Image 1 (cartoon, rainbow, N blue to C red):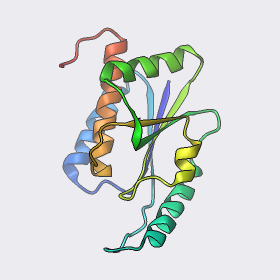
Image 2: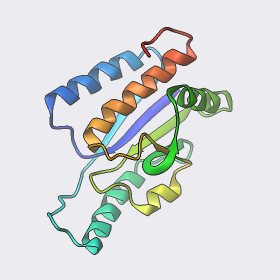
Image 3: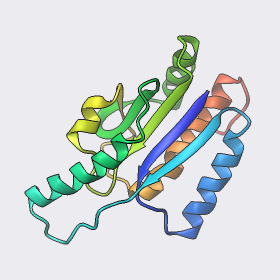
Image 4: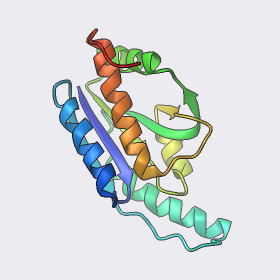
Length: 159
């Protein structure tokens, strides 16, 4: 299975980069992992709704260039479906069993994802009704993908 994370912006904090590197290394046993970073747009404080829409549209265009037609696309969105770790593991396993060889996860920027990306996604996944920093979300997502592979392999993993 090939897993691609398409993300907006660079991770600046070393501790987050270290965690991403650690989970990327661990996942190497289970899948081929790629992380694609697209440039983010600077959002001025107190930006108007119109400007925020323009920013999300620009970031959405950059994301869209990396979406593969043969991939199953899972966009992280607060309005998506919340799953347990076991349910996410079953989702990944089920996709593989039904012939999917490439899953792309999309994490938007600080304003979220453009509606065109949400519409293009095959599945909307929510980790919580709370908002998380998009850079931290990469670590959380990678950890959950790793946990899913451990669950599917029947290997122990802390609860």
